[in-house]
Amino acid sequence: MLKVENLHVSVEDREILKGVDLEINPGEFHVIMGPNGSGKSTLALTMAGHPKYHVTNGRIIFEDENVVSMGPDERAKKGILLAFQVPPEVEGVKIIEFLQQVLMELKGFDPVEAYDLIVKKARGLWFKEEDLHRYVNVGFSGGERKRLEILQALLIEPKVLILDEPDSGVDVDSLSIISRKIDELHKKGTAILLITHYGRILEHLDKEALRVHVMKEGRIVKTGDSNLVERIEREGFGRIFEEVGA
Ligand code: ADP
Ligand code: MG
Image 1: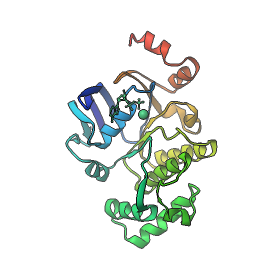
Image 2: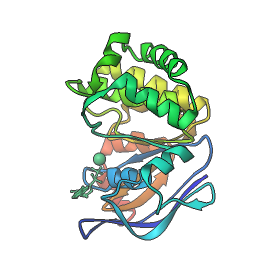
Image 3: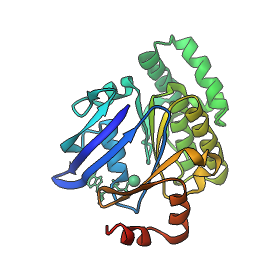
């Protein structure tokens, strides 16, 4: 379904990704781990079509089409959704209006239908109806921001959901609800690409199904199963990098 081939990406003339290969099939669950600065967010943002990240070589094929020249809106319409590491504040835009717009544009809902679904799904993520009349992420805690990202994903039900550290800056309770909702989406058929520092978010997930990739300096240097997560938690990245000569 989604194939990243020899992807090279530059930001402000500096090469950050140096040949990433990754293949995600329908319903699969991939995890990317790696030290700070290894290029994980760059990969996520590039896949979603962020204009700052320039593909200098390679391709991103989604359902037999190269999406590299497509904007983020077009990719979202096709079914690629990114949940940001740092979800931005949008002053003046109410959550409910924003989400209604998204459902109308991507799913053809009418505003009333959209409203009801948003309120219902929001409750499952601990948002009260009045919370939805606040501006997007303005004054939100880390946990609230990440739960709002998950709410978008639950409403859109994308084909591929890229989650950039949905576990960073969240309290334990938010972490467990986020993890359960990711599992719910995966079981409904969404393919997941989850970027994380910690194995903890994976506790509620079906470990058997995971494909784990480790990034270093703009490349995927090792791929394995969930045992790799446990090893990283135990030993850190150093030994693995030594073994693969990275
Ligand atoms: P990770 O998510 O793995 O921590 P990033 O993809 O955020 O890594 O960053 C990889 C490298 O690219 C870092 O050295 C970072 O400083 C640089 N980088 C990423 N985004 C930008 C940007 N928008 N402007 C300048 N440098 C960037
Ligand atoms: Mg990052």
